[in-house]
Structures are given as C-alpha cells and as structure tokens.
Image 1: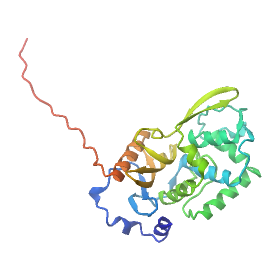
Image 2 (image 1 turned 60 degrees about the vertical axis):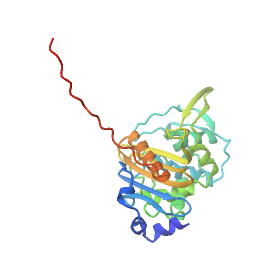
Image 3 (image 1 turned 135 degrees about the horizontal axis):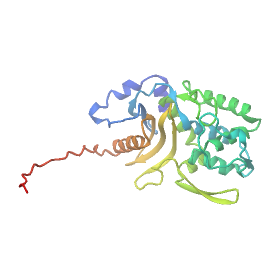
Length: 285
C-alpha cells in the first residue's frame, strides 16, 4: 500500500508540504493523523509519531487476533471473576457468571468496549491468555507496527502504547475483517444476558448519526490516554482513516472528527459566534 510506503520512508513532512496551514482545521486532540485511503495521501498530521497510551483502541488488535484463530463463534463463553478489571475497577453491565456465544462477547468488546468481554476473549483463546499474547506479538510484527506495545487485551493498562502512524495501519488491517466492520458500525444491539434482554449502544455517538458514513470505528478512554478515536469514514466521495489521541473530553473528540469531515468535504470551519451587545438607556423609576 502507498500509505505504508510513505510512512516507512518517513515522508510525512514532505507530504504535508503542499498543505497550507490555513487549510487545516483546528484539532484539539494532542495527536492526530488523517490519511486518504487508497492513495495514502496524508491530509492532516499532528504529533503523529509520539508514542502514547491507546486505551481501548487495543480491542481492535484483540478482535483481529481472536478472529485469526477461527474459533467457533457460537461456542458459549462464561464471564469469570478473572475477567473483572482489578486495575481501574471499571464498570461492566456483564455480570460474572453470565454465559453467551463468543460472537456476542466480541460484539460487546468492540461495540460497547466492554472490558470483561475483551478479557474473556483472551482467556478463552486456544492455549489460554499466554498463547493469546504470543499471537498478539506476532500480529504486531506482521503488521509492521514498530512503535506498538500491547501487554493485555483491554487497553486498561497504560503500558499498551502506540502512535497515530501505527494505529492507522492497525485500522487498515482491521477493516479487512467483515465481522469487525459490521460490529463497530452497529449503533446498538439487544443481547440476551442471563435470560434478560439488555440493550447496548456503540461507544461512538457518531455511528448511526445522520450524514455520517462510517466504515470502521473504535473509541478509547483512560486517564492516561485521554479520549481516543479511530474511524474510517467516507465524505464527499473521499475515503479516509482518522486517528485521534488524547482529546481532553469525549465532546472534544467528536468536535475534532467533525472538523476532519469538513476537511474532506471542503466545507469551511464554523466561525465563532460573536455576540453584539447594545447599550440601552433606561429611565429611572
């Protein structure tokens, strides 16, 4: 792919030479990269080589490694105490003891970014979690992610680190998995949890929103990583992959994504609203 060649040869800055500063949208995320799919043209770059925590963007790698093993997706997986987050003590709507098909567990891990679901996928990998981690390292090497370190399947650990350049490659690889594309672009799903129908929603509020054509999506958040987002989108006939890392709030992450969409469509950035205050004389009472 041209994108890989550009990145591999370090031509990021030369690709940006033809893009004027004025043409670039205001991006609040600390690190960002936007690449035009197919051509590999870099449309926007901000600190894209900095290696930082990636939070639940990790789960795209977890999903690829699980699917590479071609497991029985109908086989039941039971959530165990071992799957409970003891590092960040994050919440989960999936109780210990719940049993569901592996396909539903994958759905929860990707769409709703459930940490217990992701942990259970690694635990039930053929050969267990040690074999899963070996497969993760092989996948990282195979994709040429030279600045990526993944030590566990959820992204809760700040030791899971990468940069925007590597994550764009990871997004491209993940987009070749129909199950990942389908799940991450599903706005919501109702799943059977211990005999109860429980409704889950995509952690990315842009999925399913009018005017957005999203081909892949994954959010992430930890205190160390900030708010993160990977998407592949189509706008005005252009396809692009965007990576946003360390936005200060989920709303800021969505604002940046909207700015990038305007970059693709050629729409101008909205101007700040200026309030005009008029002074009136008031008669005394």
